[in-house]
Each structure stands twice: as structure tokens, then as C-alpha cells.
Figure 1 (cartoon, rainbow, N blue to C red):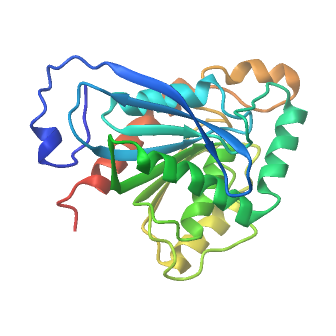
Figure 2 (tube, helix red, strand yellow):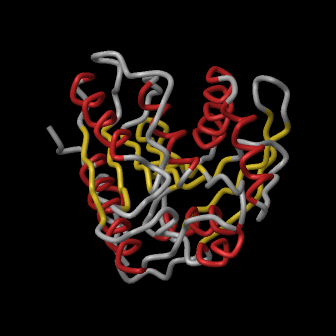
Length: 265
């Protein structure tokens, strides 16, 4: 098992200890009163606090895939919480419903930020979480959410977008992006235009952000999700790509290692 470089406490942990991933659903409430459900995961073989990572789901909602990514992050030694951006943990496999849920969640930028922050606060409250070391990763819709949180200066050390939507109504102002940013994008993603890619890069440069963009050859939207292919028959241009999935996950591990490494300048 590979662990992040985040301090002496974890370095002292034996590499031969058996990982036992603990999970639980935790109810919480957004600022607007919406009832939310978080899915929390951590490795109880690790003693003490460790960096926390928020996971933001695809446009399908808080489903098994989002939860599996929280468990994967826990297996890397993080305190991981898959948050709920739609309310009541709802999710769907129907594109029209997913589009409706997503539009409603993004209709008010301040409300979306408040929902994210409610989940972030919940992660901070977990005893395993080092609240001074926080990051967020997001998939599809969730990729846009974490990028927007970076654009708005939410206090995170890093954000990672996997096949995320890149367009935004709110451009990052110079100096506001505090988080390091990694974008993992499929070169064959029909849902993101070349103009959106160029605009994001220009925006990040102008904002002075610590920004990395990875273009994954031949990968379509949804390339990290092994269950993506089943949605093709519903007219959604998504597909799993094992090579892109593995490469982007490895990129994320290196990125988080560097981000949380206390010796980083």
C-alpha cells in the first residue's frame, strides 16, 4: 500500500499493518436547511489525524461510484468524505433527471458554495481529519464544483478535477486561487470544447494559480468510471478508459503527496 507523505506521525506507521477501511453515512444540513447525507471513509489501522479529502460526485448524484472513490482515498491514508450536492443523498441513472438535479444545484453559485462548505465542515469535524490539510476531488459535475471552489478562494490546499466541466460564469480574480489545481481531461471528451480548455488555462494563468492540466489521449467523458459504458445506450457520450483511469489516479496521488508534504516550499 502506498501512503502520502504527510508527516512524521504517518511515517511512523508500519507499512505492514493491515488496512481496515471503516465507513459510515453521516447526515448533515446545508445552510439553506436542505438535509444532506455524507459518506465517510477512513483506515482505522492508521493512528492519529491525517489530511482530509472531499469527494464530489458526478451529475448522477451520490451513488456507489462516488462512495467507492472515498474508500479508495481512505486506502491511501486519507480521511475521505463523499459529500452530497443534491440533498437527501439522491442519485439517478436517468440523464434527464441528472441534468435537472445538476442545473438546480448550480442555479445559485452562493448556494452551491454553501453546500460544498457544509460538507467540508463535516469532514473537518471528524476526529481522524487534520483540518489544516484539506483537498477536494471531483468527477464530471463534481470536477466543475471543485474548480469553482478554487476559483472562489475556498481554503483548500489542492483540488483535482476528473473529466470535469470547465466552463464557468465566474472567472477567478488574480490572487484569489489558494489551492493548487490539477485537471485530468480526456482528449476525446465531446462535452468539453477546445475553447473551454483554452479559456480555463488562460484563466488560471491570469489568476496566478499553481495549475496543471493533463490531456489523456483518446479518453472520453467519464473515463474513470467502470460503469460509464452502460450509459451509452441512453445517448450519453461517456466511456470507461482503464489506461486513463489508472494514469489520472496516479497523477492525483503524486499531486496530493506534493500538496501535503510539509517540506514543500
